[in-house]
Amino acid sequence: MAKRILHVLLGVTVASLFIWLSLREADLQEVIQQLGAISYGWVIPFILIVLAGNFARAERWKMVLDDETGGAQERRVLFSGVMYGLAANTVVPRAGELLRALYVSRKSGIESSRLFGTVVQERVIDLLMMLGMLLVTVILLVRDERVLNQIFGQEGAAYISALTSTTGILFLSISGIIVFIMLLYLRKYRSRKSGDPLRKDSNETRFLLVIKNFVRGVISIRNLRNWPLFLLYTVVIWTGYVAMSLLPFYAFNFHIDYGFGWEQAFAITVIGAVGVMLPSPGGIGTYHYMVQQGLYVLYGVPVMTALSYATVNHFANLFTILLAALILYVVNHLKKSDDTDEEIPFSELIR
Image (cartoon, rainbow, N blue to C red; front, side, top):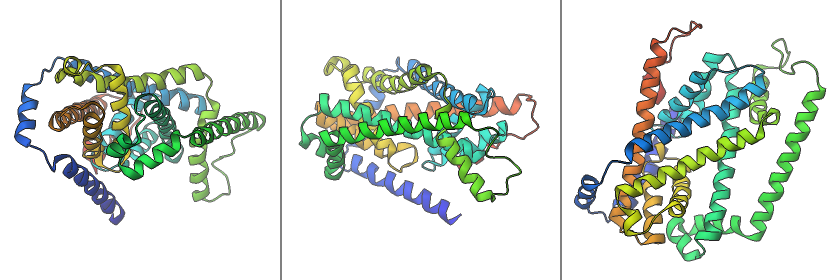
C-alpha cells in the first residue's frame, strides 16, 4: 500500500510540476476563449483513429500470444485489456501495464507474469520505434542544438544529441543486430527442445517460475511467424499517433495560418511521446508542456494557442479511452461468456 501511495504521489508531483511550467505565464482567460472558438469537425475521425490504433495494438498482441501459446486468444478480451490498461494509466503511471496482464490472465488462463513480459516487450518495441522517429526528427527536421535545449531541457537535449551522433546510431544499430541474432538463436534452440520447460510439476520455486514466465513473455516475439504483418500493425499504430496530432491542427486552423501538415504532426508526435514517457498520470502536464514548447520553439505558435492545442488533443484522447473502457466494461459485464469468472469491477481499474 505504501509503495502504491508513493507511486501516485510521484506521478502527481511530476504532473503538477509540468502543469505549473505550462501555466506559469498563462492567461487562462485567453486559453478559455480559444477553446470556445475552435471547430469540432475533426472529433469523430479523431475518436475513430484512437479506437482503430488501439485495436491494431490488441491485434499485434494477439499475434504474439497466438504464436507463443499455440492457441487463439479472444479479440474482445485483448482489446478490453488494452483499453482498461490505458484507463488505469490516467490515474497511476504505468499501473495499466500490470492490470492489463492481470485482466487477460484471468480471462485466458495464461500466466500473468508471462503476459506482463509480453507487455514489456511491446513497450520496448514502441520505445525503439519512438527512438527511430526521434532520429528522423532531429536529423531532418530539428538540427539546431539550441532548439533542442529549449524543448527538452539541457540534460534531455544532451541525451538526444548523443543518440543522434554517429557513435549513438552505430551503437543502436549494433544492438539491434545482436538482439535479432539472439532471437533467431532462441527460436532455433526452442525448436530443438521437446516438452514444456515450465511444467506445472517442476521442482523449482514459485519465484523462479514467475521469473522464467516473465522472461519467456519478453522473448516471445522469437516465435512470431508473420513478421510483415507484425511490422504493418506497428506502422499503423504510429501512423495513428501522427494522425492524432494532425487532426486537431484543423481545430485551430494551423493548416491555414502556419501551413501545418504531416511533417509538423510527425515532429509534434515525437515530442509529445517524450512527455508521455515521463512518470505522470496519463501524460498530464508533461505532454502539455512538451507539445507547448515544441509548437512555440519550432514553429512560432503563440504559447497560449500551443497550450490550448495540447489541452484539446490530450483531452480528446483521454475522453475516448475512458469512454471506450467504460463501454467495454458494460458489454463484458452483460455478455454471457463461457467462463464463470466475475468481471473485474471498473473501480478496480483506477486504484
